[in-house]
Image 1: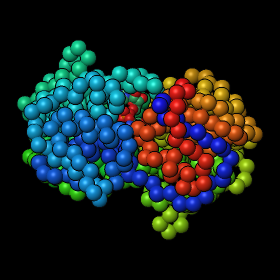
Image 2 (image 1 turned 60 degrees about the vertical axis):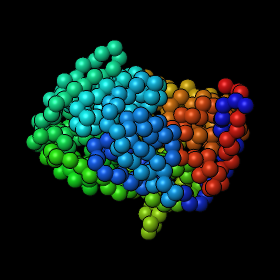
Image 3 (image 1 turned 135 degrees about the horizontal axis):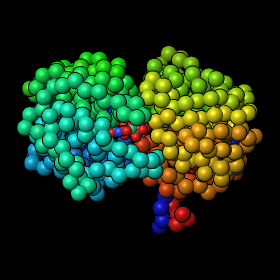
Image 4 (image 1 turned 135 degrees about the vertical axis):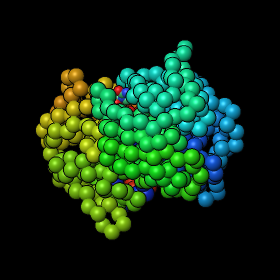
Length: 426
Ligand code: UD1
């Protein structure tokens, strides 16, 4: 028995209805925020993906009882506040582990979190996280690869949280989670505006926090003494929704998406419209269809409300089949182009120059064995495989299982020929 891989026979038109799950990137910081709460936290729509399992494991080590209830909800209760250490073995599996830093410092007054290293999408610093903790009054040092922090008491302050690439999503999450229990008022300038940050703030407010301005670059937090637990539903995953939009477009199909928030995807839908893909709201559903030629476009990734970097690779797969040359520029993670080499193996014509890729549209893609390199890049390979003539095998699909719940089953349900097989071809 070897590692699982996907085998896709392409060119089937996808048709039917797909339910979009809860957002992984909203669920992770909200799960970490349970460290701040006195009572029980019940979360609905937490996706069953590997990253959620990793964070559950880490929270378990930090004394949180984490359990899936029979109704699918995730229940988290802090049982023991002794351990304050997130070890490298778990942090290296998932960079989002960094979001226990703020809650641990705020609630347990100390934290030791292994420094996450770089990853396949490039160098990923954590300086903004550390800056935020220091500004709130924590004493933070780097000791043999760990971020070690102490804070008798955190104090509210004004902070500017912008870096060379703009705001930081998890940096903002950490600052907000630390500030909720700080003494006094905290103002975060250049806060991330992503819907996942709004979701975290809404969750914290439901637990008794006093946060305003979420969704804007200025978030204001009035510290409170304690947070209780609450019952909360995670927002729909905009990246999963965008991925299925491309699945419909790239196969000339038509999909109805359930549990899809168009207001979280306006920049992406704008780019799809320029390509010639129709996205319409029909009552509770969002219908995506494409039956005509695809126009080439220019697109640049930006922080929210701009075009998300997490959909760049998937959009590239679509633009490979456009009638002309497209230009994709990555402004968040300039090295996030590992999918370029793999898509090229499938017949794409891509020319990379620094943070920009020129996509020369081709008439067709052809199936090939390819290797997944990171979460969203692997989604792009699945999409390319759905459109390609012949058979595509995608190896190292543990990357895709980190963030997409049963993507193969969901695609099969709307007519794709995709199987999860096991073998030893690498
Ligand atoms: C989150 C998302 C990820 C998404 C990214 C950008 C989660 C679990 N992950 O990651 O899927 O691709 O937002 O939308 O929610 N930076 C610094 N210093 C820091 C932190 C970040 O310079 O301390 C830089 C990064 O290198 C990058 C940019 O800021 O260029 C944005 O990164 P950031 O928003 O922090 O990404 P994450 O929160 O890690």
